[in-house]
Image 1 (tube, rainbow, N blue to C red):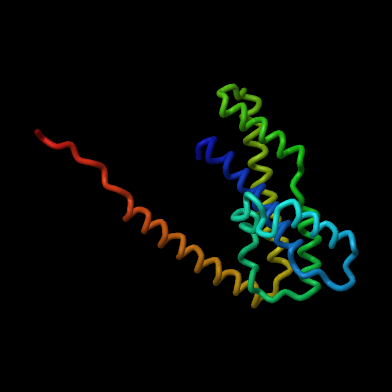
Image 2 (tube, helix red, strand yellow):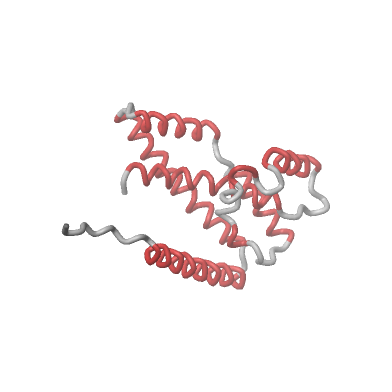
Length: 177
């Protein structure tokens, strides 16, 4: 993988983590939830608008698969705890942003490249841990529903990819004049 691809993979991971956080906070809170959780949700909605603001398509990207799966109140609470414990670190985000800017400017150092590789590796590990934690709270039936939904989504992505390939304009052939 190229460095650019790896960087965007880490960025996507960070966005997915934020998306997961937003998804879980948007879930119905149990009646005994504290006012601080409800206040945080109000602040989130106000900051990002009802549809998630400028990045509305990415805010739920990591957890769309759980939409439609009936979760118990206990599972919803566990998801909230997982979300809180996996909240993205703003310092690391800022560091990645700085490195990305250096890369765009062409001034990236070997040290920054090494750090970027390490951050990407940490991000992949964190994403895998998050996935395992989420799967750990699901029942066997819920996991099966999730797997079925993921397979359907993969099939749809493949169909869209094939359509894009078919719709690409063919390279113009030089004419012999």
